[in-house]
Length: 400
Image 1 (spheres, rainbow, N blue to C red):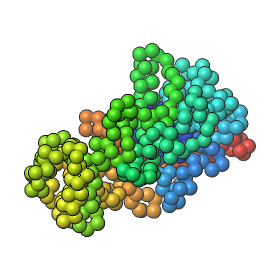
Image 2: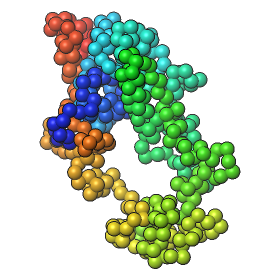
Image 3: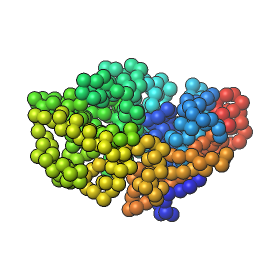
Image 4: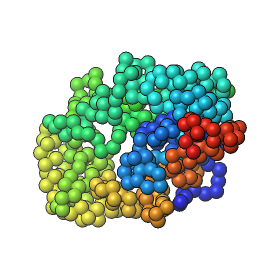
């Protein structure tokens, strides 16, 4: 597999992570930690494993969606409903730095794997619980998915053109922004706190609550007479011509983000419309200006507009398809997207490493694991002998 890093020590090297999550938010969080050096043990149900193993093109024991989220991990397949299975997790927790789980509130308590229980075994353990509504919220026991979390946070209502109905985002906003990223932030804060106190802590991540920091601009207008918090009426939701999306002559689109006056002036001068400069934020006639800019963009193809603004400073860029984004010059050094050769000899495209540390990226050190691929290896590292491991497998406690 291809790598994107030097031989320097990775930032999280030496950390051991127990991943008791599945689907998208938790696995993305732990994959990022694995990319930057952490040892991640993915604990899966002994029967089928993570449901994403069966989403997308299936080969090498997993579907394509699973492979996008689970590189740099080892798989331990164990039945947590058995005493022996829970005992193995406790042994692993004794030597781990972080445990992240994504069960409904109360499940880990019933399994005897709560923070209070495991912190008695390892006082330095950072324990993160990732749920839709949090451990103490009124909706703590309520089922939900990304669309529900964005709906209840206020994000979904804002995602529409003026006068239109809410539109489902093309990506899982709550799962990633409110879940995976907030979980990663919370764990890193807890690890820093541990450096000061010597003790781990419990981190409660609600994907709905985690969306609130992303609403700062919209929320700034809640207690004012501004129109910011209305569909299609805010400065970044279509109210003004300077920050909008425009169709081109060939049916493609350009994005214009010339919010600051200097960028708007650059745009107007580049397209020969200096008379528009003073109209940037004029309320009266702003819809007329948007229509005029729409008409302007329809006079050229996207490629022609790209050429016009190739050396400009007007915040005007093409709206790319995903396939085009992968091949864009931004990715010329392979840090935005990475290409991985699988066992079939096919090249798979995966999102790359989002952070650089003194120029150093993450690394692809391990391919996505087969279900239970590392069960024996991990149990042996915890002191189990081979006959004992085979006995656990014969009783259905683990999968080898």
